[in-house]
Image: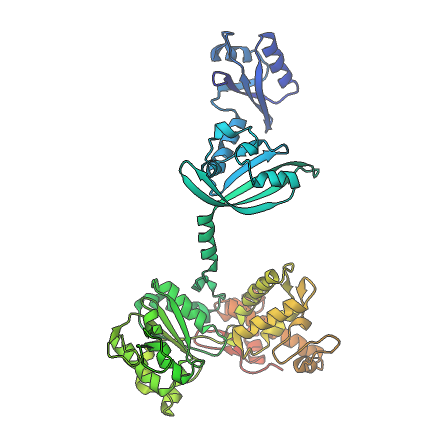
Length: 541
């Protein structure tokens, strides 16, 4: 009742407090409606609700009564009991949900419903709590079917309310207590418009950002810093590097960072037949050639308006289309095949190749003017062999992905397996590493990936057949000293790439600076590139 008196009492904790309060109220003819006790750090915090009728009791007279109790430290009036506060907070969260929620007991009587469910079903909270679910939905009730069959029930439904027609997806599940006894059911309601938006969001390919690039090596971190700096300039970018280094992913990240609103359109110049390149890139008009669409077709440069067009493997583009590409880059205009109209385009161009275009220019296999036009800003993707310190990070990330894909428990990689990956030259780069980790995840049945599960590209493992592994065969002939030396070289490389200087690396390894210099010379270690990435000059053994 709203006129009841609510008081919070704090006592020095002792036995018999509750008994004393109950006896005192009984002696005064007062009824205790509710009482909560919380013990903490030697104190007892007791919240009491006293029924107030025509008994003449007031807050002051109640405080005077409680003052007679031994061990009372303080007392104060309450607006809400702790339980009421918790219920109010839960109700606020419940009504703030995007989904509608209704719960019923085992008999089908409603005990919970939130605002979204009330609006969807066109009911009022106070008028429906405690009523049977059949009063809301007499026919085809999802909750009633769930209660009767005691199984999960889901389907699409439409409800007509005073405010209009509402289409929703309902999903009901039975509720069991800790002993497995059926005690009721709960229904979740989702507006179909929101469901469609969710499906569209999931169906849309995820954007690639620079955060998706895993690695701490200077070779990749410096590259990302540079790419972020030039991303929003709109200038042509040329990405070079070996196959499998992630050139297209890097181009996508530049597109995302640029903030351009148009699409990212990748084109593999090596995969398009020469006779189709021009029609795909520049489009054509009605009647341009046999089989052309009646109304013509816009090219990919037009489709990439306000976005980015990615010309992958541009070194494989024939000479004819190269001239037209050059004109688009210079003038920002395209002319469809068979047409006369010059169409302005606003697409950022990023090119990529794993070939030496400079040599191709000298050999007259690539236009010199196009070469200089696309090499305004150049990004050289580092090969994996120059990013040795990134191998553990990348390998673990791939392993985690495949563990989820294969529904396996999370696996780790042994030191021996990691050492084997350090010692490989990785001609296929990150793409090859991904394949190696996928094979390892499939082949290994243990929680740890061991060295025998690390199969490099030229190796194979078949049921009942010993794997062909030349490197392993050679290593089996090594002496203990050679094996220890190989492992020591791996540790040195890892430490040198994690520290800023040789002196710092020596301190980390607890050896002298001169001792580390001798080991660097012994194992033929060197700075692999301008970013001071440590590597091997040649195989140690």
